Image 1: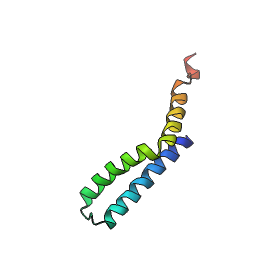
Image 2: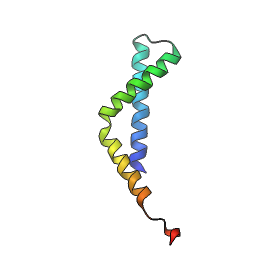
Image 3: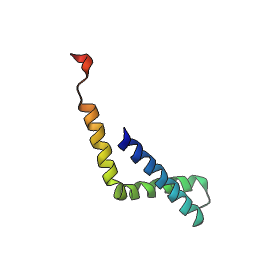
Length: 72
């Protein structure tokens, strides 16, 4: 579960940093601040967090593909 937690925390931090920077640059409307921060942090995370996303995907795939011991 650790890769999922790391990826999620990094996405949240990236969103908050983006929102803070946009706020300091003058984007004061809360609605647009959230929308633009969500879009920008999503694009940036696609580039910067690819290694963490791959680790999370691998972890989830292994967990889903594991046979259920109660099916036997």
